[in-house]
Amino acid sequence: MADLVGPRLYGCYKCQNQVSRHDDIVSKDFQAMHGRAFLFSHTMNIVLGPKQDRQLITGLHTVADVHCKDCGEVLGWKYERAYEQSQKYKEGKFVLEKYKIVKENW
Image (cartoon, rainbow, N blue to C red; front, top):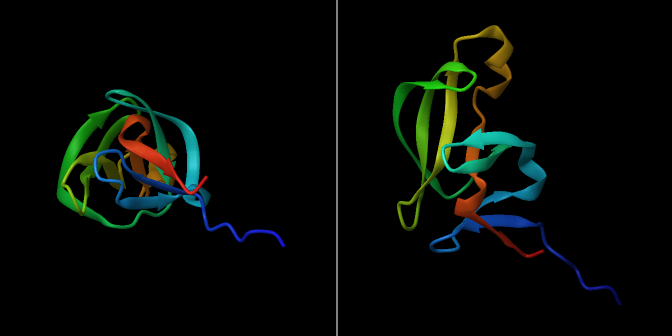
């Protein structure tokens, strides 16, 4: 009998709080301040910081920092608004820095 395996998840690197599912990755081709990052369509168990305009590599965006709900660690940011038409696809999505998340249930 085959074992049932749950969804592949990502957790906070500090406290292992589950923050997203592997199936929610939109792109693995993002850069953050400390290196590689993933763009997710959904996250869970997070708290958003205040919205602020930030100049990023791809232009001006309104973003909110993403904090782990359990330990408060900043894991990335949520795109609230993109000012350039070519960047609108990011709105409502989340960037999590690869080094700040760990694989769970793989």
